[in-house]
Image 1 (cartoon, rainbow, N blue to C red):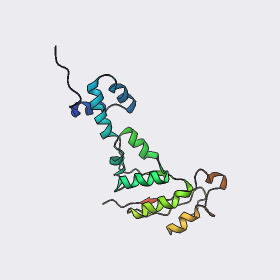
Image 2: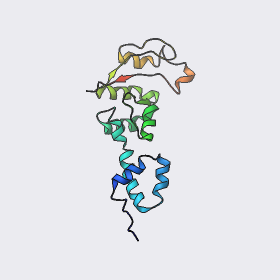
Image 3: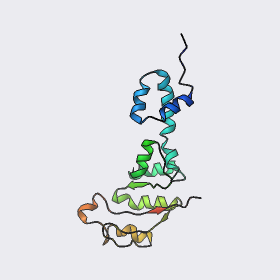
Image 4: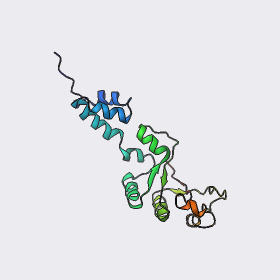
Amino acid sequence: MYPALDLSTNNVITDEIMSYLNAGDIARLLKTNTGFRHGGQSFMRRAYNINKHLSYFVKDPESFRRMQQETGAIISGSFAFQFFTRQHYPASNLNLYVEYEKRAEVGQWFLMNDFHYAPGHIQPVGRRQSPDYDVAINELNGRNALPRKHRRYISGCIKFLRIVE
């Protein structure tokens, strides 16, 4: 009889196997044997490291996560998809949903963390946003805001860019 391969200490084998599986399949595989369970837990901690994924966009992921916790900002869009599928698209972006009352606080976090306000078109109104950030953030509640019945859900969009060296 051959001794069982100890998968709990061999990240090369478990990583190679699990890299082909989605999260649900990994969860089922972890139930099959203790070696996979220990090796798989190690893989999951590394593969689903949110700070690593956030570091593509922000210099200080911990600070970003504190801001999220304090403001209730929720990550959405392609970033969320890439995180759960363990992928990274170099030309992707980071989208956040933010409560209206927290919009200025979140905007200030970006401005204080090497991002620059990038005025764009206001949707659905179609006018250009003010080139001045303070004016633009306040216009979300003024003449350029979405109709009142929709403001409860989405007030508008403010775009920030960071130059990556």
